[in-house]
Each structure stands twice: as structure tokens, then as C-alpha cells.
Length: 406
View 1: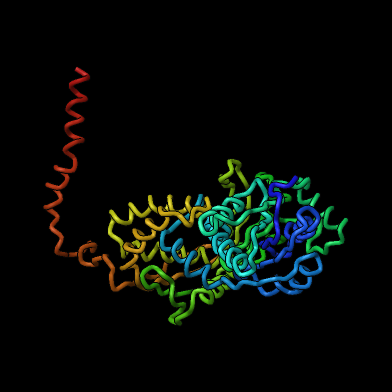
View 2: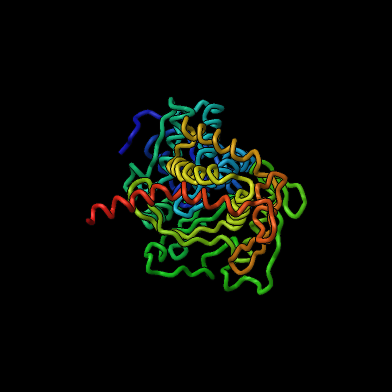
């Protein structure tokens, strides 16, 4: 069963959920090693940490670390991804970019404790195993990794519940509410149960936690103004805010108005398709606002090329390739494009919709005089010569086509 023969001290990525609760006991049974639990505070809420230390210790851990990495997550991972405009098949990468900083925190604890192994609860079917382990390879290649889902006899979440009940491990879930969830400051994902069949419509009244459906949103719209400096959101309705607080407030506002609900069948890195429901209220607002501001701050060629970069950037984040030379190189390009993405975006939020209400920037490339249908400096007669030159290849190809038809 064992993938590694000798383990003295292991650091476990711990949440107190089903998988990691079972793993502590399983590690003690199968590796007879000291287990140190580490929970990462990525903004999932204080209630997630209530009683967590006693639970970890009671199930066999020698100690519990809680690493507050919310600010690092926002400043070093979310903002770069937002500036890149990276989306993976419409998904705003909430779980994806949270894994590298969690893995980095695990490494920090392992170094502090002199541990030789890191353990995670990712399944062999998922993307997260890759994200965790590529980060460990990049930052601490000497550390060993144990992934129990790739070793043990447990084959399903139902089996894991059976194991927990047999070993008297307390759980917060039941068989009926056993959605697989991942929550952080940016989003909440839901997978499993009835969602596994794409033919089933999500029961949003039962599923949603960060907000409400569009139908349940208020009949009156909400308005918001977001200020950016070099592509980074810095203010809300004129008030300067740190990134964590800004996202939290937009989550509340967006959630109330039914913003940011995504029902997606995505292509996983490991080859299969997977269906899930994502809640990303604040992030969806920020992506919309950032995209809107770029329309007046970026020239055509840069904006169009940046769309290609965004696709590749999203793939790198989704695939766990954060700590790679290519991602760093793409960041250099993105940061160069963001030097002029400064300004204010006004939006209306209404029943799941985000509607532009005004864009301003000191670096705006929009020239009212040039764009106006009234009198302007634009010389209409110049267009004739432009069209002749621009259309010359079309004209020559048409002549050749006529020759072929003769």
C-alpha cells in the first residue's frame, strides 16, 4: 500500500473536512509517523476554524498550525491573474491560484518542524494534486509527498464516511449533504451528488452560500464605483481599501444581486470532463470592471495580443504551473500593459447582470472629437486611400479568381 517506506514527520494540509479528518488516523495506522496539521486561512470564514485544533489533536495530530495567507493570496496570486484577464473556460480560477500559496505555507511549516514529508488529501482524479505537487517540486524538491487517495483502499466519499464512522472520527457532513466544496476569499465551488449529471439543473436555493440566484435578487439595482491603479483595484465608492477587504465587500454586494454564479462543465487537466457550480460574486465584478477599463486604456494591438496571453496564463494557473519561467515572463508583459490601466469604473448590478455606467481614466485613449459624428479633425476623404490599400489583396485575389474561371 505504501508509496514511501520511511516517514518520520509529516505535515498535512488540513481542513477538518471529510478527507483530511480521515487521513490523520490513516497515516498513524499505515506510516506510524508524527503528523502535524496545517490549515490555511484563505478567507473561508472563521467558522471553519472553530474547534479545529481540538479535532486535529483528538484524531492524532501532534499540533495544528493555522497560516493566515489571505493577503498573500490576494496580492501575489489573485491580482496578477486578474491583471492578465485569465479565465479558464469561463472559470475565474478560484481554487487554482489558491493551491500554490497553500503548498508554500506547508513547506514553511515543514522547514520549521524539520519534517521530511508533505501530505495532501487530493484525489487521483483531480487537478489539485498537480497544483500542490508542482509547487513542492519547484520550492522544496527534497520533500517527499504522500497522497493517500492514490494509495488506500477507500474508493469513494461514501467509503471515507464509513471509515470515519468506524474510527469514531467526527464529521460536519452527512451522506445527504455530501457536496465536495472548496471555499476561499474569492469563490466557493460545489461538486458531486446531483451535480455530477449535467442533465440536472442546480437547486440554487439549496446550494448557494455566498449569494442568491438572479430570480431571488432584489428588484432594485445596486451601484458601485471601483478605482484601479495600474490594473489593481484599490478603492470602492471612493474609499481606499486593502485587497482582502475590497473583495469581501464586493462579495456581499455581488452575492446580494445574484452576481457570479457559473454552472460549468470543464476539461480537467487529468483528462476527464467535470461539472461544478462556482460562486464568485466579487471576482466577477472585478473582472468585468477591469475588462471595461482596459477598453479605453489599451491600444488595439496590445489589447488583442493580451487576449492570447490571457488564455495561456489561465492554462498555467489551472495546471498548477505558477512557479515557472513562462508565468514569470508573461507577468512581465502583463505588467507593462497595466501601466496605463488606471481609472474608475461605475457599474450597475441587477439580478445577475453587470451593466456599465461610466469609465474614466487619465490615460484614456478615447478621443471624443475623433469618435464624434459631428464636426471633428478627422478627414473623411483620407478613408478612400486607406480602403484602396487595405483592400488591394482582396482586389488582386478577385482578379486571379476570374482568370481561373475563364
